[in-house]
Image 1 (cartoon, one colour):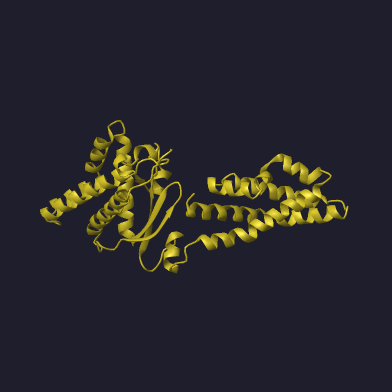
Image 2: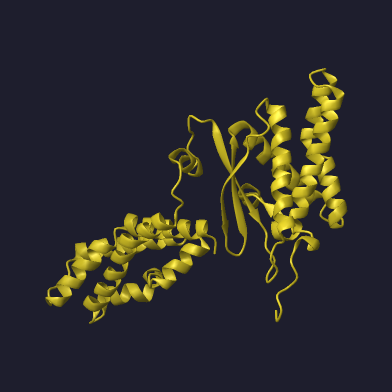
Length: 308
């Protein structure tokens, strides 16, 4: 599991517990039960409301959040049998106390764990990761490297990916009138897959992102072709190439510069496709499996480990 996924999952669980307000009614029911005092109907209503709200929030958990909730013993709060125990069982005081302790522990310590896992960095960069605009005019793009089970990436593969992104960023920077050399790798993470965070000028990052999305549309369109042909057709039919031709026809770009940009985009796109990578925005709009259509070339993967 990637660190970023774990942080996001922990934040989801802590937020769901806090917003549902479960801890207080659980503590009150436990306290009344140990005193053999009756539980007011208003308190039961608050408890059921908290359990309902938590269940609704938990239904939207990502896989890492779901795994965290299960490991912390919170998954039972979504089950009707647990609700019955907390309302009508003779040992409901003990049950309520147990779950109140779990909820309290999670709400207190999950935010601290995410703080430890989070990369302490520049405030402006952290703001960009949260999707907030900054005065720097920069933006962050995340690229995910698809890993095959029991086969690791070679250095050549990762170098190919980063070189392809650098080439595409440089070409898009020329089209956007920005500095071609402004791309930076600001973070990397690994788990079942690897990810890289790259920062650059916001208009150029947006152009690269749009280019990669258009690549995906064409990879899907040509999905019946062998991988090499699919990648070539996808790279040579990008809308950005038509944009370059239009600027050349209007005299806004010299023929030599236009040809250089076309080659850089086609070559960079081909390298990106061969390296086997995706971006989160691609997966959000995917109507085919990116892990299959964007798989890396076998030669860029290390041999299987002995015994696998």
